Structure formats: C-alpha cells, structure tokens
Length: 325
Image (tube, rainbow, N blue to C red; front, side):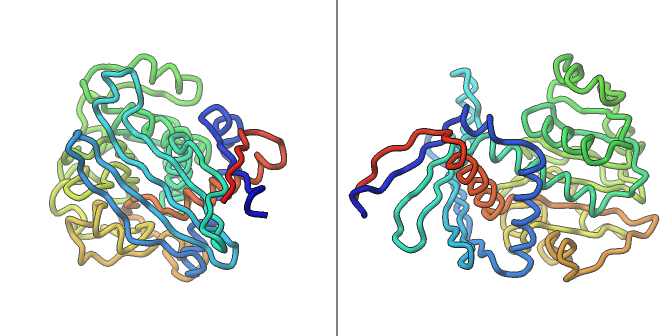
C-alpha cells in the first residue's frame, strides 16, 4: 500500500562495501549492450555552470522492459577542496516507472568513479592492441587511479607506466599504489612518453591539449576521459581528423555535445556498444590510431545502481525509511 512505501538509502560506506570490480564490469557491459540494442534510452544531458563556481549536470534514462528508471545528479565543485572534500559529487535516484516514486537513493561518487574505470577497461579490451605493454597516463587523481587499476587488471601485459602530474613533480603516493603491479614513474617529457606508449589514458579536468599532435604514433590507442562538458578537451586541435584515426564513443549524440568529439562533430564514429553486440565490426590494422571518447552514459549509472540496490535488499545493507504517499 502507498502508506507502507519505503525508500532505501545507500550511503558512501554501504556503496563501497558492495562495489566490486567484476559486478561493475558486468553492469557496465550490460549498459552498453542495452544502448546498442536500443532497449535502454538515454535522455538529453543537462550540464550547466553555476554562480557558485560549480558545474551541475543530470544524466537520466530508462530500460522499459526491465522497469528501470532513474537519474544521476552530479557535477564538479572545485571549491570543495578547500573544505577537505571531493570536488566531484554525484547522487543517483532509482524511480518506480509505474508510480514515479523514488525507491532508492545512492551516493553516486564511488559509482561514477568505478563505472567510468570499467568503461575504460572495456574500451581497452575492444580497441587496444593485445600486445600493448606501455601506458602513458595523464593525471594522478581519483579517475586516473581507477582507469589505471582497470587497465592493469584487464590487460596484465601492460607493464610500463609513465604518468604526467599536474605539478610536473613525482606523486609518491600514486606510484606506491601501483608499484607492485608495474614499472611506474613520472614522465619527464610528455610528448616522448606518448610517442613511446601503446596506450594513452587522459584523465584530467580537460582544460586543454595534453600533448602535441605529432606525438601519437601509429598503432596507439587512447582512452579520453576528461572532456565531459562544453569547452573541455584533452586532445590537440586537428587530432580526430588526422589520417589513420578511428573514433569510438559511448553515445554519438552526447560525444558531439560534451566530449572530445565536440571539436570535430562530423568525424565518423562507432558506438562501443555496437562492438559488444556485433552490430559493428572493427578489425585493427597495425597503423590504426584508435580513440575512445568517454562521456559516460546514464545507463551505466542505472545498471550499477540497480545491482547495488538488489544486493542491498538481499543482504540488509542500507537505511530503509518510511516514505508514504
């Protein structure tokens, strides 16, 4: 009955206790497949600057056949650093599509981090050369860490990592986190590091080009994470139109609005989900340069949140509130 309705709250601790790599990979893969088959819908993205200096966004969607509906309200508030907090903030809400009532509210910070890392890992498996051994990573923050974590987990042949930090100085904590899994050190010259790498991962705030156009060598794969808002970029001007570049995106429309593809919206591209469903084929040639422009799908947030909701209901995790109507 409506007066017996309950709302489940999953806070940071509850989410992190259930957020394991393999279930997240499965959920993200499902999101891409649903998107490819058009069984899941992605609604237009809201992404706006605020007077407070923050950026606020909403990503939403549904899967009618699974009774899955919801949204993620998220963004970036750089002033949070002065408070000792995380600049990226996200909250996911799952809604009963039959009534419009919320059924679960999820702290979305860790979800966003993990689902983006998993998406990057799936992109590497689909697009990078299987013999890739060297990585150049731009960034040492939360997203850079999870991207490298999934890369090393899914492609254990990646043994050498050179990273570029925002300060240009070594990040000893970052190095220590990965030292047991790879040869990791600061890149002294970012263009040289890119030229010597098989895989390049850009996970920065997207304030400008990270390297020169000519630095990327034939055969390289790039995972681009930082462009998620109008005006952001990490690739140099003219890169996507360069000869030999093959572009892949999570969502074609979204990529042209807020991703790297906004800078070359006419570039032919393939959605990554179409590779997973075999709706499209890609046979890498030795000299192909592949780019995965990752803008993040609402369906990724929803499939991961639903996984967490199901696990919480089974295990009794979370806080259930009376939510009568």
